[in-house]
Image (cartoon, rainbow, N blue to C red; front, side, top):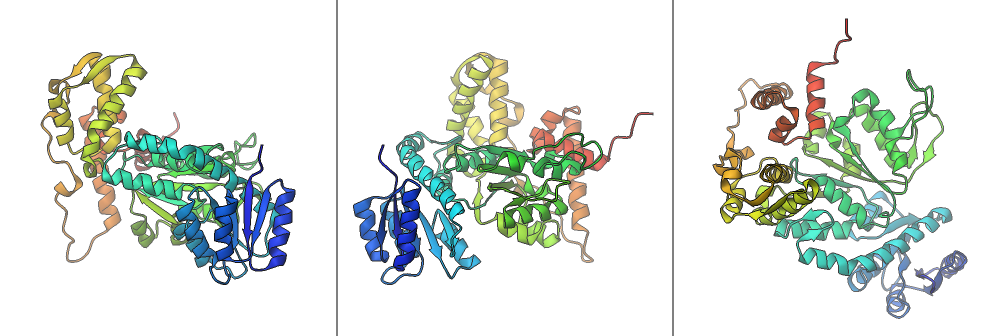
Length: 465
């Protein structure tokens, strides 16, 4: 089996030769170039899987070399080095220029070895997946995401560009738009794909247990901690953690998360010794975190750490041409899951689906199709099989609701929003006869989110007397 090739580009011969000898000792085949122009020529001749380049060089600097390599050989991973680094330069290298990683000199050789291994895995995985991804995208699918509309093609392109890096990604969008599926696609397209993907719904964890759930705890850390527990971050080590509904996280936990991101160190509850950890963080929310920051409910420094690369998932209203493909996809899956034999959807049924505004987005569409398949069992789904609200849709888009005016003497916005939320939850429960699953669907929420909101409003359940 041939060795993996690594090209070192640096105008300081001592550094270049030292890295070459080091990498050769790790089992790689190496070549050296003295500047960016020579490096670009060496890329064409040597065809490396990984390029390690200095930033400041004569003739062609590291950023220019990176852009050329990404344009000509997108499967090649580029690692940048510099002795004059800043936070802004690191963000530029990864977020804007697409570097695989960024190091400041002097180098930590143990960390470099780990990063080169991952860069090599990324390059190999990318080569293997390019043709498969192209075939899937031509059929209107990308990972677990489905759709061929222009908004979704833009999302696919962004995910493909961002996935190989280790940068944090903040995924926003309305409830039910597929934020977790986007996160899974980011993980699948990264060099961490063979490592764990751990999804955490921050809103579903009781506040008193959040720290233990995320960071773990040692035996005796608090009353009831009879054994040690490995937290979700430790479970995701070397992989990816997905923090869904990050906007629900308490500010105290936000501070501990910020420290973990900054230092790469994990402190389980009750433990004073740090554990080194390497986790890529993907977060999602249907809240406007900039407003949450302005109101003081979310830390600004954490927001900027999470929002290195933003991805906004489009609502189903913004991609109506995908409704047909999604409905057929969900019908096939429901048939398989429930052993039904529904053959398809009548054209008028499909027209009704396309005419409905889908306030619950893709999740609502999936639930409707699954329910219809279970009840129908076989044959074709006709317009009469549809729920009345879909057969004769009314405009339920957010813009259709009249907005209250701001009183001249001002108002308590938080109290107003809480009152609206409480009224809507009460109306949904009343309309569904107290069925939390159906009420959550009407509100476009996860059931666990609705249950947690009810718990917070009603307070802890009193002990039995």
